[in-house]
Length: 529
Ligand SMILES: NC(=O)C1=CN([C@@H]2O[C@H](COP(=O)(O)OP(=O)(O)OC[C@H]3O[C@@H](n4cnc5c(N)ncnc54)[C@H](O)[C@@H]3O)[C@@H](O)[C@H]2O)[C@H](O)CC1
Ligand SMILES: [K+]
Image 1 (cartoon, helix red, strand yellow):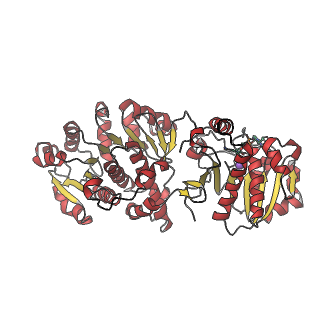
Image 2 (image 1 turned 90 degrees about the horizontal axis):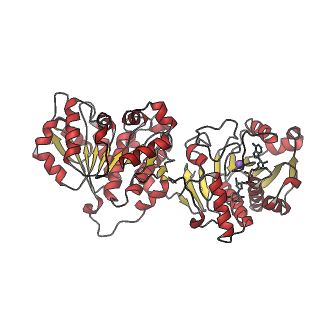
Image 3 (image 1 turned 120 degrees about the vertical axis):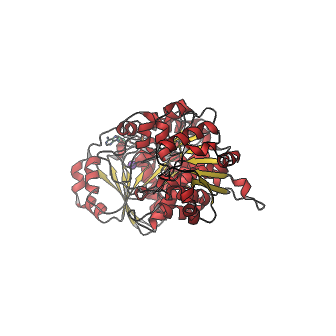
């Protein structure tokens, strides 16, 4: 699913109407009905509903939603911010077809009337159809006053297309002065604000994308931005009845040091739980039995180590490493590795020794940052998974600079070095060598804990091992599944108590979840109740 600008959305609508003959009124009907369907599904207890309509087509969608909710038996009130004579085109037509009474609010003072007070205070759910992609900041007039009034109410509010006051093209996390929203129903494709903004103030509240009649061919964008969840489809096919583990790849986790045996253990278990046919953990000999005891399904190989349990360069002379590298594996290098000089020498030697696909994380990234000339994916598959701090060292920038330029920085780094870059954080970005970027919208603050990155490394390596010919989708899907598993896990936990191993235990729910809801919308963020 592409991520569009507001102008590209308008072009998509125009192409849909002109090249594919879909009437604009049909788009508006489908949009409003999708909002009603979502509300009936996700807020079944809300029977007394107030729809707040602006004078543009966002308001038109609201009028359609109001009619559909009333037809479904809800007690619906409609408030129009403006004079009906100001309505134009499809919105005016929907007003003409409106079977319900509409309360007109032309001036801010009208918000204080008893009639409006009843509409707002007695409602069990609000629908925000005041302004959508036609928003020109800042929010003004009765809309601004209505926003403030709604902040005094506790009823949930479902935003049509965007919470009013959000610029569709915003890449900001926040939007001063926007309406609050408990859920968002957008249409055809997510816009930049849906991908980048904290529209609902929470990682758990839903943003869904409803199909309203635009064929895929009409959805065009030059932004080269997609949604990571669209890649999950590569893991949806059932396995063959005569399947065998040899068909699902082999992950080789290389990591660990004294005090950090858990990192390679978690990365290995995550790789197994993600479906890799075989997983081998290569760790310092002194921690071999410790790591092996975590997961019976895991194979282990002992490596030579220094005084502090760090994997050292003597391994480069050993036949054990040759045997390991002779197998067709995807290497996950870094969990718990440490940055001792002997380990640094080992990492540099390993990079020179093999061209096997490699997921590089954690301390291996910090070692690579000291040898930037080795960051080169032209003749090998490299996937780097830095958090902003590790990215600042890789790019030689401050964390602030990294965070302020995530998208261009990720794209430039991935294309310059011809590798896949997973830049973690709010809305993890997956930047590919061709310059395309996928936004991930799953995950929650409960993941801000040791181990989350280690299991992502294992999940990425396992997806690449299983789908070696679909590298971009494999990495996008891995990041999506990682956050989705954590979203399922935190439902049975709390953000304070969630552990990375809880996330691993919920990967099966993530694999089973289909973001394409049978009701005709895609779960872009959040989960069904
Ligand atoms: N394929 C689709 O996505 C479809 C989307 N639809 C809906 O159409 C709106 C966009 O409609 P448009 O008429 O262009 O603009 P809006 O209704 O969003 O806003 C214009 C409306 O809002 C007022 N306004 C603008 N800025 C402000 C402000 N700062 N303060 C207050 N009021 C403001 C302006 O005066 C106009 O009255 C899109 O969001 C979807 O909801 C189609 O219905 C179907 C296809
Ligand atoms: K809106």
